Image 1 (tube, helix red, strand yellow):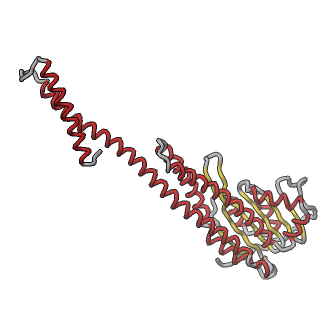
Image 2 (cartoon, helix red, strand yellow):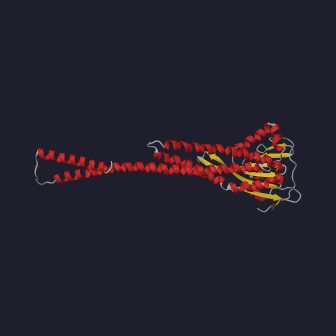
Image 3 (cartoon, one colour):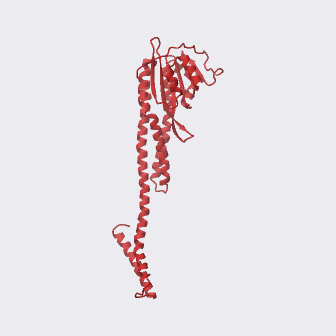
Length: 335
């Protein structure tokens, strides 16, 4: 992607205190070792414009921040006098309780030579927890901030991807549970269709989140090197590897859930075939009996008509026919 020109604006000096809570309750800031970290969830248009004026962000980036349907991407801005900044849009899985499924939680990130700004559209707990840990621990804040904005971004993404794996484990646990139940001959085959459908939807939703982000992370790995010391350039390989491991897990889960779905449908089909098998045998056995009763039920006189011997003979004939048919079915191994 070509570098875009940076809008030249006058940068306002950042405040010297650690967290500005009195003046801007929603905007949390941390400062240490010449680096600033700003964390703001669901920024409003006014707040985004205020940050853009402070750091000199491009108006198109503000449009992307305010948009709630932005695809993962990385934009790089450069200028002659400064190192410019990097803007990235990343997605991470978040369980949406309102619809009962996984949804994409967007994280908008601005990385400059002396600042990191994280603007999530939903509550991304790993980012919030890391921010609070840095706020409470001066040693941790010094350890992370002293290595530059690129290393701090790595820590944020590393915690986010660590948060992704328990969701994969939960999906894997559901698949194992379905696999164990499917081995048992139970009448829950039709109910299991709904369980398989829910897990399949989670896997599909997860894949939709991870797939478009794969090339974005590779681009981010190349572009973020300008904000990393030389000895830390390989750190973002770990992020790319984590994303690839997640994709491999999802590919495997996709194959497993499709196999479980086919197996469950086969069990349902076999159960229905067994029912049809019994009904067919019953129908075939009853067919000659129905013929006999219909034949002797005609209003005509025949040998043994209106006698006990005729009735007994008819019943015996019917029993012999049933036994003979069942014996024939057994001989043919149909029973």
